[in-house]
Amino acid sequence: MRHQVIVIGAGIVGTSIAWHLQKNNSQVLLIDKKSPGEETSYGNAGIITREAVTTKPFPRSFREILRVLPNNSTDIRYRWSTIYGFQRPLFQYWVNSSRKKLEQIDKEWVTLINHCTNEHNVMMQSSGADELVRKIGWIELHRNPYDFESAISNAAKAVAQGVEYQVLTLADLKELEPNVNVTEYAGAIHWKNSWQIKNPSQLVKVYAKDFEKMAGQIKQADVKNIVQTKEGWQVVTNSDTYLCQNLVIAAGPWSTDLIEPLGYKIPLFPMRGYHQHFAITEKNSFSHSLFDADKGFVMGAMDQGVRVTTGAEIAMQDAPKDFDQLETVLTFAKKVLPLDVAAESEAWCGTRPCMPDMKPVIGPASNHNNLWFAFGHGHQGLTLGSVTGRLIEEMISGKPLFIDAQPFSSERFASNF
Image (cartoon, rainbow, N blue to C red; front, side, top):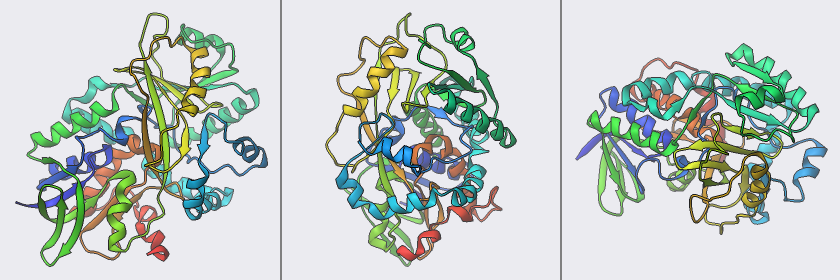
């Protein structure tokens, strides 16, 4: 059977794209080796970060580099083999993190972030996913008074982009979350119009189910090859070959493996993350997700239990798991809340697809007709999945775009092709 569009990748980004296309009367097939929401989209912190109006730059100050270099911090770890293997995109990341370049990058980035909750709301209302979202914001905790004051200053600037926040004293924090041990903190910021998702994987599954209700099709298969023909595109899997007019690559960190045979060398690099769940009890129950800004971990109340999520590890996708970063994080997390009973035998591990200019790749391929890219969202795939879905649908349908998409074009890496 021939389809108008095939989307490869059933994470939050690919599923959102398929949903938007099917809702606008395209005949869509969604393909992934696993069921929707079972890979990278399973393991995030579960926050739609409306406050994330600036990007996360590479450390450039001497103080920060000295802090990260010993490779024992809780927020960032690295493996030398991966640093060597991705030295070019990591160097580009460092270059793009200069103050001058960041100003322009952030201006472009925020055009996506500003729409994240509104676009998710459209999909939630259609799919009935409201029960999975808590629209109460989340809390950013600070240990260092100087850094706390700097964060407050940045929060005030973010108001111009529609961000809502409240500065919390320790007394305020204790009133909001009585079970949280606040003794090691200087204060907190409550990001009020960001949303919490209590089961990110289930959110993707609910969106996918709604996509199927609209007559969209999902196939669980391992994509082996993609081939352009005179009639369109062939997607060759381990079980069958599928035909389409338009092909969307939204396979997260696996996307570059699919497009490199076509001549595209987009400098995506991996950032690994870990999380573990703990049983929720009367002593550790809490409402707002907590981000320790100094130690780089997030704690959120999920369906599976209290999820403790690490910062990032620069490591290859197939590298052996190393739980040392998570274990170090847990020594701090257990001082904030009592986490006595692990809810699973082994912690989760997954990979984020990151770009050296901190912006995703969204738009048409430069050297092939009817080939579309949508990947490289880093740690913001959950936040930007719905926005990306709408944008790709408008592009394929030839509609006026609701934002300027040029900053996210793959053509910015044309010198690599």
